[in-house]
Length: 284
Image (cartoon, rainbow, N blue to C red; front, side, top):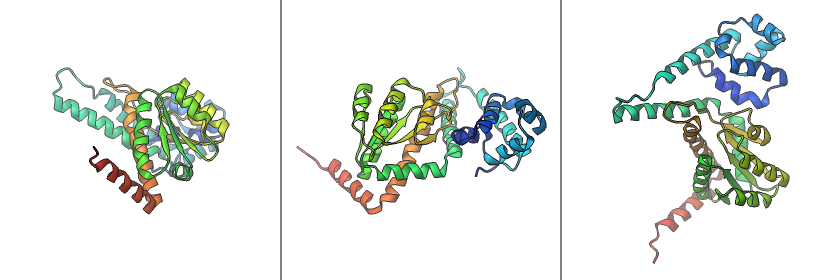
């Protein structure tokens, strides 16, 4: 359960796929009208949505708050913090050190926000699926394709059979050869990239387990995979939201890698030693 000093909007996004239709109705309203919510009573919100007060109260409990007032307080704090961040822009007169400070703070915020929406049960499911798979395929396009290659570079150290390619046609060909003993990991900020969704459809036909890392709980990708994992990132005046999400995607990959190594114990350590020995040898 989420602690009440943490973010309301991030919690709603992370829980969204598990909501009922009524809960999604409440969630959509809050996500689209956060400022209006902090000035509304539970009665007025329930009336606007055509639901019972008790339904709104249960929704607040579902996302980790004691009640409606506690949710409003967290939401108000989140909105104020968000406004402060928006105004922290890179100015023409900023020194390299000042710019570095702003970039670092933005990256730190992205990682902290993403940590807030990490679902422990989903994370455990992902680790179990990866360690139990006969082979693992990483799929990504554009910037997310770079993250997929990084994931391949990390997980090859575990001793698991992993692969990744950036070519969309080869991705489709690879996907078609998967089986129900394999696992596919899709990385996409938007969760609506055409190439990735086409590859997902091919993978689903094979019966392979599917995992995604994305920023949007309402995306076709997150709703189409078995195990969705989420990042949280915001756009600034010097970089796009998609670019900002890469740091969170990479951190989630690191999290999966460390969990897998811990679970594989001696087997993982042996694989790591073999890899280190191989790349340290001087070959003619």
